[in-house]
Amino acid sequence: MYSARRIRMLGPATSAFIGLGLLCGTSARAEDTCDDEALLKAKVSRQQQAQAAGQLIARLHLSRSQARQLIPIVEEAARLHADAYRQEARLLPQMIEAFSTFAAEDRLNRGFSREVEHRAGQMDHRARQVREDLTEKLIALEQRASAVLSPAQRAAAESSESGRRYAEARNRSRRHSAAARRQRQAARNDRLAAARQEIHQLYQQLHPRLSELGQRLLHPAAAEMVCRAAGQRPTPVVAEALDVAERGLSGYTLERHDQEQVELSRLRTEINNWNLINGLHLTSDQIERITALYSSVTPTGGSEWDRTKRPGTVPHTMHFALERAVEEVLNPGQRQVVIDYQACLIPPRNLKDPVRVGQAADADFGEQWLTRARTMSEEQLTRLIGDTLKREAEHLGQLSAAAEKQRKLLLRHSAQQAARLSDTEFELNKSELGERITRPDRKEELKHEIAMLSRTRGRPGAIAQHMLQPTFMAQLRLRAGQLAQGVDLGQSDLAAGPQAENCEKGCAIDTPDDTSRAGRNRKTK
Image (cartoon, rainbow, N blue to C red; front, side, top):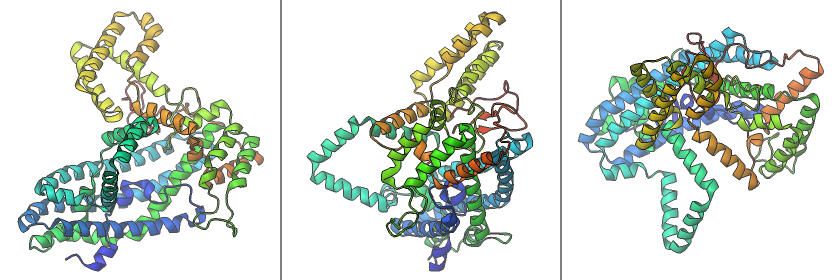
């Protein structure tokens, strides 16, 4: 059986990498305690996930035949986890170096040097690719593993603590069926709840994740127990993965991994804050008024203060009122910047113009697409339409068969119409034609609807999310000091310099091997 010592210490070596926000990801923590808490959270997370993996294997009651069928699956998963940790060992130190240099330039708001921007963007992209590749391969293994289990075992795998709580709630609802029906009907009629459910389903479609079964059965801690259930000793691959998961590598321990992950998360938060501060272009008077409002409602640690909170955080009951007060300090353009802002490494090139935030990438796409398509042969156009639909499905969601057919016809008809125009006529009409073929981003529509409905119900929104945080306010005070000292902050135009494309989160990724605007593929928010 899996040893108690290993259960206490083991966890997926890539858990923090899969979710960079896991370690110190919330900027609501006070800076002086954030690092220690994040390190502790990483250790506890590994312990809990290892324990959950062991509990799953015990709950499944695998037959020897099933265990033998699962060995190559869990062995491959263990190898993937170990390989991902080795990639982290190479990437994290480089990312910290690149992000530190990037943050230093971001702090001065003079724009980013091409080399620094490229380096930070490339490292971020590599890390994301490692995470996505690992998840994709593990999902495929999960499907294979699920086929080995019986329906009863699969149901047992889903009976987690949260699942048990749900079952208990469901049983209570059955005892009060009339009340339950009224509640379900109210939920269906609640547009806010419906919008949140729709956007959740859309994100699940665009960004698939491992189910609870995959997270536990493909955990390195489960691999050893599967081998034991098959009457075998752990394979060399499993034993190596367990060693990596328990101690890390000889030159890159788990302790160092966790510390660098915390530092990386801190840098991300700092960069995101500077991106927004730089895009807002607040005056000294505005900064003074905003920080004063924030200080007036944040606890200082006195005896009357709720000890479950951190100094510098806004009490939950004050979020909406404080947000409305800060909103009054901002001008309409600044409010729009905050509403449309997406926390990301490299800011979108249109952040400088609040009217066009979230729109410029779409307009560019339609015009650039038609510019290319109008000169193509029918065969080339067919390939382009197919590639476009594939990219849109990846970033905007899959269309139904009927809707996809209509979109193909629209793209082809628009390209043919553009081809019939003279160059002069096309230049005069390409904006209107481009807008016509731009597919709406349902995620953005839902996000704006949710924000509007939340506001009408007195719930905090984007200002509270992005600005009313201790780290943001600390950096805002630093910006006030820079302005007071007469530091030349440049008021840089983020639209100048390399024209990085918007990624699916609204940030920008600019790579040195593809910098021409005409040659870039569109990636929507």
